[in-house]
Image 1 (cartoon, rainbow, N blue to C red):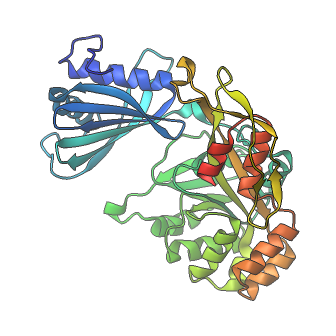
Image 2 (image 1 turned 30 degrees about the horizontal axis):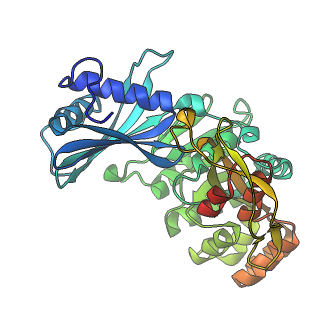
Length: 392
């Protein structure tokens, strides 16, 4: 971009915003970042989870472009001192409008504007997530249960919501009453009642979950178990004939089991309610047009010393070309560790066992750790070693 003028005139904020959103959509970006600096407006897109610079625009465009986004998202146009957020849709010439969530943040040289593209067409199925065949079978079996708690864990941006939405698509929504409570609703799902929290009005995950239980649901999706109260209500619901799906910001399946107990719930309730845990990360897929083969210089081992990839193994790495914006990657896939809770692990939870014992038990049960799951995709040439080491 570098101070280039998009079609429609350099000072036309409407044309500039449309142009940026159209470019972001074409590049498959999830977010557009507009960051005012002393003498320019920096533009960056988040593509496949990584920030990619897009050049700069004249500094004088920062205020009118942000104002245009505020008008569309129904924010207070006169308020520049506090953060704001809102949503809007814009027609860029496609079959359906692009829906965006916009937020502003007061910074040193003006308001930073971040717009997230809410792409409904990116709704994917369980089989498209990147699960190994045995893990796909396990998740399908868990989602088919009539009651219990299923948790998806990982850091922000790990694809947890996509996994939950994929799981919901496996349900017979004609026969079952499915209700969600999210923050915010990112994709509209047919046949499902979707609710959105509103903390300012006192509509929190805990209060919303209590209200959902009065709606005669069969399946409940809670966007996130953020506090002790929400966790305890969700656990009780899963013990009283409801299938509950939710997320936790934990690193892996063992951390998730331990965190549930730490949230203050009785250990026997956790043991009886928890059906399974899915831990995940997103890795970028190598660009098929420019990735190159090389031989590993050293062995790759896990924390126990077990060899995962031997020195000399031929794998692929990123290079960069025009088609992948010089990143070496195009698109993303998930890597997963999937735990189905068995009787031995339930007994360990009831006795408040140590994390070390949990790890020994899940390893004994054949759990494939995240890094090992990632390295399997490295062997297949789907992603790079650097990418797996980055996220695990």
